[in-house]
Length: 397
Image (cartoon, rainbow, N blue to C red; front, top):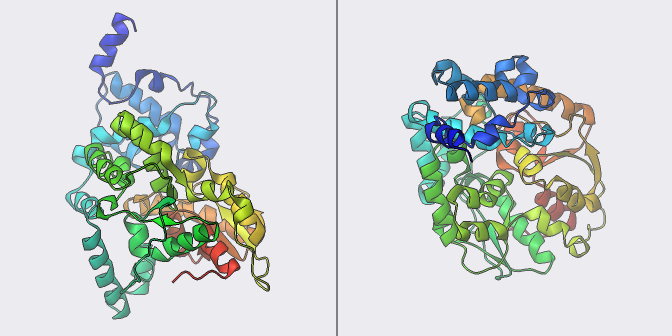
């Protein structure tokens, strides 16, 4: 690196790589894939517009309210990365920009909510209280739909470990609100001949939402806790696309050889299952072949690149229907739907229209945020492992 380049590196305002920021050639191929640009048509709400703003801040422009709005309205779906001919790592650029803004843009209540995710017993207790409030009518159905809340469980059966061939990452919201998916995952993995181990309480949260919000230090702390919960060398299976993407990025987040090795053990559960397609349970007689529309969670398609594995897994259990929007975002974006409900709703409306046109019986989605957000709009959504377990008649309780 030349002396001027080193000087620029020392003077950086944003904690991003200067070469990454310079890689964008403003070709515009990302525009059709950016959810916020598609619903607004505003250059400022496109990947190249946001990169131009980052460059301006690096050049001395203030990181003011306008800059903050451009950064905070990004869903962080990273579809632009898939479309980009220059391989611009937009996700990391956005994480750096959010890190600078977090000091003033992440409110006290947001920080409290993110902190709760790392305390699983408290999260379960609060979810159960929410379930009681729903049943008592204190939380009207309209409010639950607006917040993408499912019918929260008041009591849940404990998951049972079945062996030590693989680990299953259970996480925070996924375990609190969709534990049935974990139960189905354990049943399907067992039908493939493998025993499943479950982590302890230190694996309460992967830190994905913290990274998205710019709370890098908090995410790093959670990452270290998670790593301590999975000793040994067995594969770590993840049935939440967003969590899987975060776990696979621990090497970058922590910058250690130990974290790199840990990330190398992580697999999306469909990757593991697709590699054992011949061992998948046979559909039971009379289960039929429903039309299954596959909704690709952004962090499964654009970050993990594991979307083909979902199709391999589901193919024996129904007629797969490809949506006509090339895997574009549904607008959930982790906490995005709660923080930017108008934009998220407009993005979801486009996705729901495409789903309706497909005429499927069920939509398969491998991420809790996506499935909850779509279900709140009336879409019949199930996790792929649930579809497999039901078709094979597996016991998941």
